[in-house]
Image 1 (cartoon, rainbow, N blue to C red):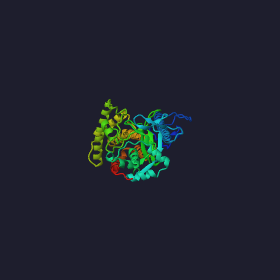
Image 2: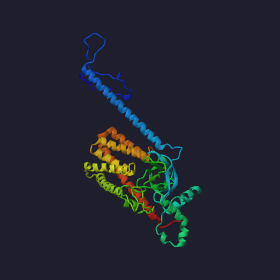
Image 3: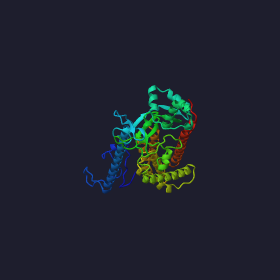
Image 4: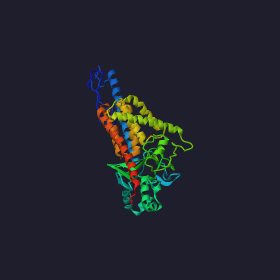
Length: 432
């Protein structure tokens, strides 16, 4: 910008850390000294202009320094999350009342990749018992032995009514299917598939988990990351259920029904025991679930193009994030979903700084829970970069993209539940 007396042009540099004050050129009229000396004394407007340029250059250098520092910190976190260490992080031990479990044998920082493995048995789509049995028979002898050593608590439908001779005849096939049903996970690759892992299957459930297990397309298998610091001798736990925002009774019902896979009652710190339930945590989870249901109703209306009062919804979304933190659920899938919706509400209402704050929190949570080589992290990082770059100019494209993403999320959750329920329904008749 050109200016008359007392105003200056500030040149734009690609790298602010290369700027020195000697290189900054101030354009504008220069007051000449009355004397014939080579020295010139700056006028008052020029002194003020120098101060402005100095402040701007200092701010730009500081911003550049902070940006570089943040990038280095993120790279360190990524290396820490992916790099395989020579020293093992865990070992298999007896877990009281739970069978076997994985226990940390050293301090595991948040974001560390605890394990990464490929599936022992992978069944595409909806499977029959015969498919599982054939996949088991194709395994090497040592892998078959390790598979049969996995926990098995499942009672197959109608088994209690079988005559003794039939139960004896079906015992080998029954054990194979029962181990699969107890330990399989549903994964979304390019299609749905059901898989069993040797090490990841040892992870026990907690309603306050310290780790997150997910499918990673880069390794074509299961990866487990620490979502908070884990101390030596602490058990590594994940969540088995769809949402941790349910009340205690609903959470325990999901561990038993409708798929009836695990047959246990959780007694973690959030649940308490049967005689001494944790009523404080239960009340908070009940409140969280009501918020979650209200959010889903509003999101469905918004996806369908109906009017939603986002300004009124925003405080509830922010409160949901706070309660999840107080329940030590930050880093879980529920928390990632909550900060995504809070970022959406802030963006729609024009609060870009707060939208950036929640989006950054989502990015960090996804990085620590899924790893920097996950497609989810790459997508969230791209969304954050676009929000930083374009800010208020995103409106229509961002809304359309967000609607599509949320619709996919709801549909994926329904497909996963249908896959689990349909597999159990197929087990009425054993194929030997």
